[in-house]
Image 1 (cartoon, rainbow, N blue to C red):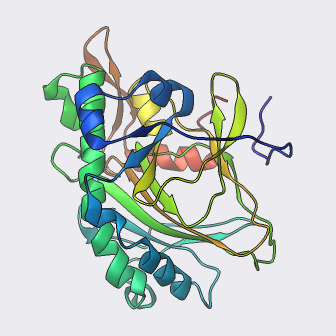
Image 2 (image 1 turned 90 degrees about the horizontal axis):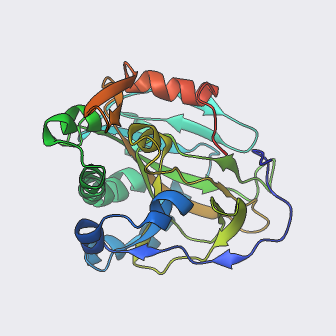
Length: 294
């Protein structure tokens, strides 16, 4: 049985499947991406300007974290700041939502990274969910309710800068075994450390560090519920830090907080409500009220 703790055995290193947006639009998501890994590497060769400024982004994040252990997470509903939304803390790290906050607005991350990434990322996740729509044969008249704002570009996204500090009071921390809650997560980091479960074998493996002009894309639990497990969420964790530090940037995309979360019933060609509001679903996930399936 798998647990939420860090596996201690030595792990192999493997490559994840790599796709381009053109391949996804033309062919959909391969079965091993949808079912076996719940994630893939997105090649950004078709969006070259999005892959050229990572070094500066990592420098901006380290600057923002120089005198703090906090993690600034910037929630977006369409293009506006909203918040503060929530605060959580664990033994390994703090996570704080700051919006319209002078401390955040003065950081290089706010000035440089946010405008640089948010709009291209919104474009990417809309293409991804539109492909999901095609692959599950979802009727167009059900898509806006199903997507919770992806159709008219009012969905919610959260851009997060994540700093794993090797000098933390718990210096060898990482992030425990979990699945993400939203439809999609887009992520890149400056060092290896991601470990993923192969659902066919139930074994974990280290992800070979992707090439520079690429990002990782994870399917989340909301997408799995919405598609009735046609897309499985990626089971993953971040290895404990043993030296230096590690920086990552994640974009978490899901329905608007006040939108219901639906699943598509293909047999009856209609939508079934999972939760009345997406924020209620997220709260239940944080409280552990939705059972994990691994």
